[in-house]
Amino acid sequence: MPAIEFIVVGAGIAGLRAALELSDAGHGGILLLTKGELADSATRFAQGGIAVAVGEDDSVALHEQDTLIAGDGLSRPEAARILTEEGPAAVAALFRWGAAFDRTAGALDLAREGAHSRSRVLHAHGDSTGREIADTLLRQAAARANIQIQPLLRVSSLLWDTAAGRVSGIECRHASTGEVVRSQARAVLLATGGLGQVYRDTTNPAVATGDGPALAGRAGAVLADMEFVQFHPTALAAPGAPRFLLSEALRGEGAILLNPAGERFMPAYDFRAELAPRDIVARAIVAEIRRSAAGPDAACFLDATALGAQELEGRFPRIVATLRQFGWDLGRQPVPVRPAAHYMMGGVWTDLNGRTSLPGLFAAGEAACTGVHGANRLASNSLLEGLVFGARAARAMAAESAAAPTHGEAIAPTGGVLPRPELQRRMAETAAVIRDGISLRAWLQELAAAPEPASAAGNLEDRNLTLVATAIVRAALAREESRGAHFRSDFPRPDPALAGCHSFQRLGHPVTFSAAWDQHGSLPV
Ligand code: SIN
Figure 1: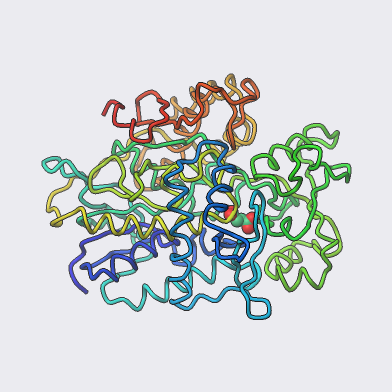
Figure 2: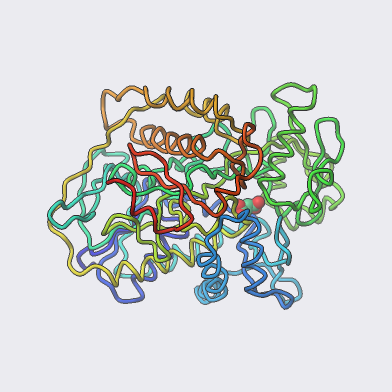
């Protein structure tokens, strides 16, 4: 194994794709680490699929247009263009590496999902697309001599080289032995995934604790668009069951939504009915629950019975089997659903090549914010994002950095921490699908008063969650309008003055808004 030159934090789709790109370009040693087991990434749980314009009736321009419309006017057009234009080649690489997507009579089976104007979602094993992609990429990574895969290493801080003015490596703690390890590198990529664990109800795995934005934020990096958290409309809402995702592809195949009284309601909210963008469907479900007399634990229902039990079994085997474990028969009865935190549109600010505002530090995938998703991500665009922007970040890492630095001080994790159950409950109450200024302001004061923990070692993830919760609430309070996934009941309409404006923040400084993606440079350091 050659000496480590690059560090990739996170073994989901963006991290794996970046590591493979660095490896293929013949660059020295690549350390690919993950804090859990390799099977823990959100990528592996992805059901619906990967959106890409490969259908005969489809085009890059249509995919781009759908991405921009779902983003509610806030997606960066350059990023949406890159995502959709580079998408087909990115997926072709998956085919070359052996990924097998579902076919009908030899032709790729393209599914439809919300806010897509064409059927363009590739899927595998029916509803286990993420598993197929993760296994394919991991097989490739394991076969490369210059990639060292290291599970169970949790990054506690970035290393900062003051003389060079750059991030120069990482400090980690081994999850089981507690051993502290330092590693220096020419460039560090944060591909740590999402932060769904900041909310009580989430479709994300337990590892989704916002580690990338927290590490970068603590080091002084700019975070962008942190107010935009996507809630997936249909997570299982059965007592005693986890918030298991019921893929949007079910609605794509014809499943409908019923309110607590058993009535269909989506056509009254949007002409696209159940296939409206996610933010619209999630808000409609919350509104129907609130207006029902069934109490706060009420749910709406996803009714897929018209699709036929046998067809459902064939197309959605994992969903059918999982629901059965919890006593629900998708083919024969409507299943209770409520929105759950699913995807962070915001994150560590990056340019189109994964560069953050700190030299030496890169980010890709859900941890990053390229602006591609704007105020609301189009369904099944996130796996594609990981492939396209993971590879781009790797190329920029290799091009930018010359020699591995030899210095670096760990950036100490400062800031308060709240107990996770309290944090999750308060985030669910104040910063979820519907928000208002009075509640956000009061909650921000509580967050600011969070006590410093007695020891740094034990509660790193809770610290990270408290930091990203604070960033979400600050941005949500500052954006006095409603747009995409950010809905303020006290400002229920978009503010024309904020059209196209992204939010930028650096820890300890006010949130600023600008339509120019690079304007974060004016933030105080
Ligand atoms: C789903 O299958 O509904 C989730 C896919 C996504 O989040 O894009």
